Length: 165
Image (cartoon, rainbow, N blue to C red; front, side, top):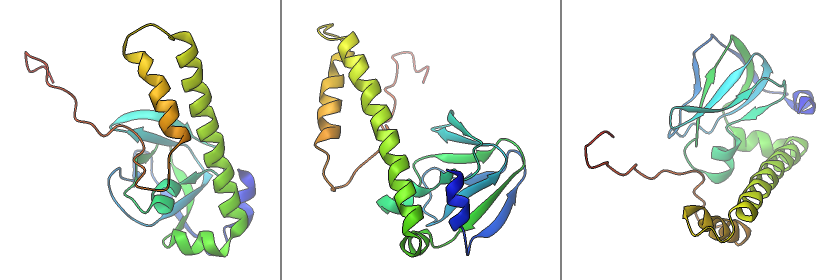
Protein backbone atom coordinates (compact mmCIF):
# COMPACT_ATOMS: atom_id res chain seq x y z
CA UNK A 1 0.00 0.00 0.00
CA UNK A 2 3.03 2.30 0.01
CA UNK A 3 2.00 3.30 -3.53
CA UNK A 4 -0.90 5.26 -2.02
CA UNK A 5 1.57 7.72 -0.48
CA UNK A 6 2.55 8.92 -3.97
CA UNK A 7 -1.05 10.08 -4.54
CA UNK A 8 -1.71 11.93 -1.28
CA UNK A 9 -1.52 15.40 -2.79
CA UNK A 10 -3.84 17.70 -0.87
CA UNK A 11 -3.80 15.64 2.29
CA UNK A 12 -3.11 17.42 5.54
CA UNK A 13 -0.49 15.83 7.76
CA UNK A 14 -1.90 15.09 11.20
CA UNK A 15 -0.08 13.73 14.24
CA UNK A 16 -1.67 11.53 16.88
CA UNK A 17 -0.10 10.78 20.24
CA UNK A 18 -0.14 7.22 21.56
CA UNK A 19 -3.67 6.26 22.74
CA UNK A 20 -5.29 9.12 20.80
CA UNK A 21 -8.45 8.27 18.88
CA UNK A 22 -8.30 8.73 15.12
CA UNK A 23 -11.81 7.45 14.28
CA UNK A 24 -14.74 6.53 16.53
CA UNK A 25 -16.99 3.59 15.73
CA UNK A 26 -20.50 4.84 15.03
CA UNK A 27 -19.50 8.40 14.06
CA UNK A 28 -19.76 9.80 10.54
CA UNK A 29 -16.86 12.08 9.58
CA UNK A 30 -16.46 11.74 5.81
CA UNK A 31 -12.72 11.53 6.47
CA UNK A 32 -10.13 9.20 5.08
CA UNK A 33 -6.70 8.65 6.62
CA UNK A 34 -3.50 7.29 5.10
CA UNK A 35 -0.81 6.13 7.50
CA UNK A 36 2.58 7.78 7.00
CA UNK A 37 4.35 6.48 10.09
CA UNK A 38 3.45 4.80 13.37
CA UNK A 39 1.19 2.01 14.54
CA UNK A 40 -2.61 2.09 14.76
CA UNK A 41 -5.07 -0.32 16.34
CA UNK A 42 -8.48 -1.10 14.85
CA UNK A 43 -11.13 -1.90 17.45
CA UNK A 44 -14.60 -3.33 16.92
CA UNK A 45 -16.86 -3.10 19.93
CA UNK A 46 -13.83 -2.33 22.12
CA UNK A 47 -11.88 -5.40 20.96
CA UNK A 48 -8.64 -4.94 19.01
CA UNK A 49 -9.17 -6.77 15.71
CA UNK A 50 -6.13 -5.53 13.79
CA UNK A 51 -2.91 -3.58 14.10
CA UNK A 52 -1.86 -1.40 11.19
CA UNK A 53 1.74 -0.26 10.73
CA UNK A 54 2.35 -0.36 6.97
CA UNK A 55 2.89 3.11 5.50
CA UNK A 56 0.15 3.80 2.97
CA UNK A 57 -2.51 1.86 4.88
CA UNK A 58 -5.93 3.42 4.37
CA UNK A 59 -8.43 3.97 7.18
CA UNK A 60 -12.04 5.16 7.06
CA UNK A 61 -12.68 3.87 3.53
CA UNK A 62 -15.65 1.67 4.42
CA UNK A 63 -17.57 4.55 5.97
CA UNK A 64 -16.87 6.80 3.00
CA UNK A 65 -17.79 4.20 0.37
CA UNK A 66 -20.92 2.98 2.17
CA UNK A 67 -22.08 6.42 3.28
CA UNK A 68 -22.47 5.01 6.79
CA UNK A 69 -20.91 5.67 10.19
CA UNK A 70 -17.47 4.25 10.87
CA UNK A 71 -17.63 0.51 11.47
CA UNK A 72 -14.68 0.49 13.86
CA UNK A 73 -12.62 2.69 16.14
CA UNK A 74 -9.02 3.48 15.20
CA UNK A 75 -6.61 4.39 17.98
CA UNK A 76 -2.91 5.27 17.83
CA UNK A 77 -0.91 2.47 19.46
CA UNK A 78 2.22 4.62 19.16
CA UNK A 79 2.79 8.21 18.12
CA UNK A 80 1.58 8.21 14.52
CA UNK A 81 1.52 10.51 11.51
CA UNK A 82 -1.20 10.32 8.86
CA UNK A 83 -2.50 12.18 5.85
CA UNK A 84 -6.03 13.35 6.59
CA UNK A 85 -8.59 13.99 3.86
CA UNK A 86 -11.66 15.80 5.18
CA UNK A 87 -13.64 15.25 1.97
CA UNK A 88 -12.64 11.66 1.27
CA UNK A 89 -15.21 11.15 -1.50
CA UNK A 90 -13.81 14.10 -3.46
CA UNK A 91 -10.26 12.81 -2.91
CA UNK A 92 -11.14 9.35 -4.22
CA UNK A 93 -12.90 10.85 -7.26
CA UNK A 94 -9.87 13.01 -8.04
CA UNK A 95 -7.41 10.13 -7.54
CA UNK A 96 -8.67 7.08 -9.49
CA UNK A 97 -5.39 5.26 -8.81
CA UNK A 98 -6.11 5.44 -5.07
CA UNK A 99 -9.73 4.37 -5.63
CA UNK A 100 -8.44 1.33 -7.52
CA UNK A 101 -6.01 0.50 -4.69
CA UNK A 102 -8.90 0.75 -2.19
CA UNK A 103 -11.00 -1.57 -4.38
CA UNK A 104 -8.11 -4.06 -4.51
CA UNK A 105 -7.69 -3.88 -0.75
CA UNK A 106 -11.39 -4.50 -0.16
CA UNK A 107 -11.37 -7.39 -2.65
CA UNK A 108 -8.43 -8.95 -0.78
CA UNK A 109 -10.30 -8.64 2.53
CA UNK A 110 -13.45 -10.19 1.05
CA UNK A 111 -11.42 -13.02 -0.47
CA UNK A 112 -9.76 -13.72 2.88
CA UNK A 113 -13.09 -13.67 4.73
CA UNK A 114 -14.88 -15.97 2.28
CA UNK A 115 -11.91 -18.35 2.15
CA UNK A 116 -11.92 -18.52 5.95
CA UNK A 117 -15.68 -19.06 6.09
CA UNK A 118 -15.49 -21.76 3.40
CA UNK A 119 -12.80 -23.55 5.42
CA UNK A 120 -14.99 -23.44 8.54
CA UNK A 121 -17.94 -24.73 6.52
CA UNK A 122 -15.86 -27.71 5.32
CA UNK A 123 -14.57 -28.45 8.82
CA UNK A 124 -17.97 -28.40 10.48
CA UNK A 125 -20.18 -29.71 7.65
CA UNK A 126 -22.98 -31.82 9.10
CA UNK A 127 -22.14 -30.96 12.71
CA UNK A 128 -25.67 -29.71 13.34
CA UNK A 129 -24.58 -26.88 15.63
CA UNK A 130 -24.50 -23.13 15.08
CA UNK A 131 -21.47 -23.47 12.80
CA UNK A 132 -23.74 -25.03 10.19
CA UNK A 133 -25.00 -21.48 9.59
CA UNK A 134 -21.73 -20.70 7.79
CA UNK A 135 -23.27 -21.93 4.53
CA UNK A 136 -26.03 -19.35 4.86
CA UNK A 137 -23.48 -16.63 5.61
CA UNK A 138 -21.42 -17.52 2.52
CA UNK A 139 -24.56 -17.61 0.38
CA UNK A 140 -25.60 -14.16 1.57
CA UNK A 141 -22.11 -12.75 0.87
CA UNK A 142 -22.13 -14.11 -2.66
CA UNK A 143 -25.61 -12.76 -3.37
CA UNK A 144 -25.22 -9.41 -1.59
CA UNK A 145 -26.68 -6.59 -3.64
CA UNK A 146 -26.05 -2.87 -3.31
CA UNK A 147 -28.89 -2.47 -0.84
CA UNK A 148 -28.07 -1.50 2.72
CA UNK A 149 -24.97 -3.56 3.60
CA UNK A 150 -24.37 -3.91 7.31
CA UNK A 151 -20.86 -5.21 8.08
CA UNK A 152 -20.07 -6.80 11.42
CA UNK A 153 -22.37 -7.82 14.19
CA UNK A 154 -24.27 -5.04 15.84
CA UNK A 155 -26.59 -7.34 17.76
CA UNK A 156 -27.16 -6.77 21.45
CA UNK A 157 -25.74 -9.66 23.49
CA UNK A 158 -28.40 -11.84 25.06
CA UNK A 159 -28.84 -11.41 28.80
CA UNK A 160 -27.83 -14.39 30.85
CA UNK A 161 -30.37 -15.57 33.44
CA UNK A 162 -28.14 -14.41 36.30
CA UNK A 163 -27.60 -10.98 34.65
CA UNK A 164 -23.83 -11.39 34.26
CA UNK A 165 -23.98 -9.38 31.04
